[in-house]
Image 1 (tube, rainbow, N blue to C red):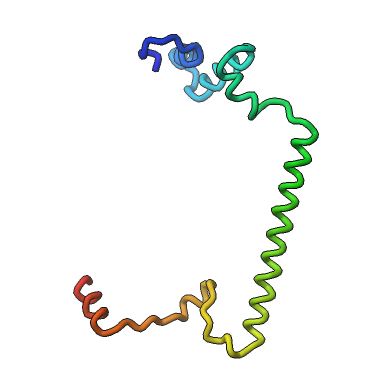
Image 2 (image 1 turned 120 degrees about the vertical axis):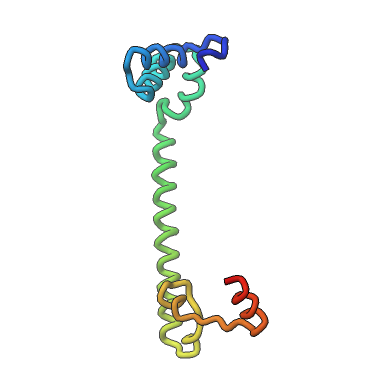
Amino acid sequence: MVAAGEPKPVVGAAYRDVLEGEEPEAALVAAIKAAMAQPDNVWRRLLEPVTGVRTQNDYLAQVQCTLDARAQTQDWRKRAKFWKRAAQEDGRHGETVTPSVSAISQVVDVLPRGRMERVGEML
């Protein structure tokens, strides 16, 4: 990128630091941090929404999002527990295949004769 011709201060600074023996990642991070300190730099415009100041509303929205996700997870666990219990209590659901490892290992799929022959040919 340095040889591309256009002046690229971040890449150029990182390149110089790497030539002086610094680790490439550390040199690039240091160059980006230095560029972010300049008010009109493109790196600042790019990263400030991500790394900038957060308002109280931002934090409250994130906390609410986390609480909602936990509530939804708990709700789905309760539903799964209910249906699992319902399936175990009633004998008519004994042959129902559920997506559990133990139930899947008990499933035996019988293929028609013609299909079995084609599978045998492929092996």
